[in-house]
Length: 547
Image 1 (tube, one colour):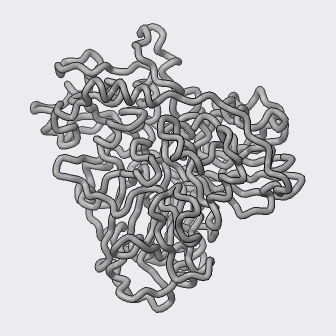
Image 2 (cartoon, rainbow, N blue to C red):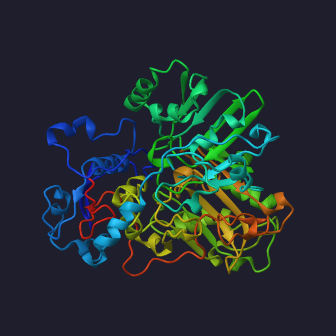
Image 3 (cartoon, rainbow, N blue to C red):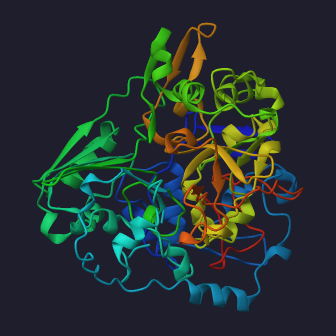
């Protein structure tokens, strides 16, 4: 459908909720494809959101930056009513942000992908990890362990078993304790019998190649939420593989998605559970930042005690029963970090700072802190974050915040903070991870930490209906809540450097981005995927024209 507003006329999806992520291409191209060949080639071979499709088109047919505003492919910019790009309020402020040529050349050189190397043998006497804690992976490199001992990698996650995925194009030291999907599926963990992959987006051919050759014929169940044409497309992808079966998750409520990201890996030695934040496609394990009490969401309408089983009410219940009370808790802020934004309503009282925040500020059974008294910091990439990222503007394809939603909630952006992750070497790897936490006023301690598939949306977390008597959830989500009480502590210390290893106390929690978060400046704008950015080039010298 088309809609006209303060930001011009744009073609948008019909959903008022967030267009939760989806796929992406392989390597960026540096040249245009002939128009006659662009039909099927301009669409990803897996089902995906409009934002991901736009990113795919821009990667295979980038729009080269020009000092002039008249670009043949930039027709959407011409549909706006009179006024400059600055009048839209979303585009970059000026071309002064252009990267100097020497910087672009250096970044291009730094983005080389290392060749894959085989995994080393496990150390003598090591037991395969089937009996270990479940893994929580947050996003990232095309290659696997690159010579480092996988048992050392996993040991660096103790006692929390929380890992980032590997990222291509950053310094090796920032991948020293990170995992690739091939590490997770390594035969060193045991003899695989069968597996189940729960996700939102699948590239079946790519996924099969991530399994070790000796396991590629083992039974695999893909649990998805695709319907109609998308379902038929997924079945066509899987048809060549006799060992792959598909299961469609039930989605009866409009605009809901199967957004859970989980692996069940059955070995002869035992069962492993991996909860992560990555789609099962190349791009989500390449140059993005990704990551136990379980916090799950499932579609439905829940009343009475059932409300406490799902969504933000599940989080509220666990924080009430297992979190420790804290003196002057009103000064401990709530931090939320996400890669997509849903419709929050006309103002903060409609959901964000009422029922949702009320759940996040709960601490112990005697918690009496009013939500309005607690600071709220929301981390979402700015246009500049995306422009200067490893992927450049196409990284915005997995940040599907639309102009349709954004122009209805300008009030929300006053809470927004920039993405910055020097602590893990991932400031230029756009986040697909989703995290929520309760740090101390000086950001040195944590009351709790949650890594999840749930973005900032009512569809993911649930919203009250019938005067608070009923919780309605649209989507499937899953996350892991880390509580100090489970480790015999009142609070976690924040680890100063994510990959600092044993140099810090064992109970120091590895937050994957920088604290305290930095508030948007006067010229910063949140990334909006379906409007053009033509005033300054990205790290590949291209502009962003989504259509």
